[in-house]
Image (cartoon, rainbow, N blue to C red; front, side, top):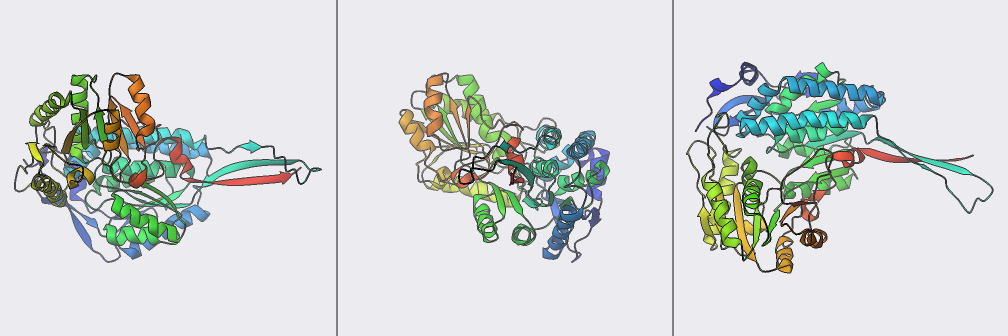
Length: 499
């Protein structure tokens, strides 16, 4: 159940064997302390690379470089079409290195190569090209003010959208490169500069991508990458006085701390946080579509998705049928190493995450939940957890209320539409929800009542680069993707003149 590293592309193997510094001011440098930390292959628990361990001094240097690039560098004042061409060049370079980068991501994260190719590489290429289009379409509006208390003078007003400044970005380990590109692309499109700290568990593809920046023509200091721990490098970035905006994707608990710290200096803040998304299956739902769709909503990406469909509520008339289908689906998933072509689910990202997920499963069983399938680790060395379904759960159980971030589904029947809404809304989270029905009337009655940033119908976890994504309640503040990402990286300036 370990990766066969001989299957790696030569370029990926060469990269893993190299030294990995941080990108600061256009140059790759070691941490000032000289310290490094290991990166581990979760299929085996073995160290595969060592990365610079950035601390506060390194963050200071990176922010200084980003500040200089914003205040006096060419990037913010560059013509929008020139920024667009750089984004397009960057997309081309990422596409050229797709096989290498997908391999690196799979070994680092434990996710299968088709998964990392589709989401970390191909989707990132598309997003860079999508945001290149936005670079030339950022605009304000014009107004004809009345100003009734100055009746003898005509006025003209207009607005400008200007880059917000230096952005501090912190990204998670579940879809590492894709999440980083979600931060980098709108920064480049709007003329901002940035310092990005990737998750310490999965920094390798962000480092490899950063090597493409100079080649694409991104000026020094516009994008800086600091690798390190969240409690040191991440905290230093959030608290830095020269950072204008924080963009964070991760847990709600850390997001709350970041929001409080950002509020102290009135930084802009975008937070894409945790979820406990509900899936509501009604009596008329198509069985085949629903079973496959809801199963993949939780087991896709090993359940390591913020918007994973982790709570399943099925009308009592269809409950046994749908749950039995999902249990059979889970039994058929082939676990194995990320690089193996027949693997359908690899390991979780780390031993820490494996212990967390297994702990939740144990707590559910101890509180009275029924283990319908899965629930075990597979090997001693790797970080595998079987796809798991828990029945006979109650609303107050930890497995129902708290985000597990693993392949664990809790299932409950409901009586009617009102009961389904009450169950769906009973957690502190509000990232996603899905409705499974053929009745459009049911959909339209439900959508306004569900407390979620995204509601899917007869599908789940479907994201498009042009469609905004984010949550309500404890699932976050602001939106990623689409035009909303541009708005969140710009300040609005109003100009009024007497004619």
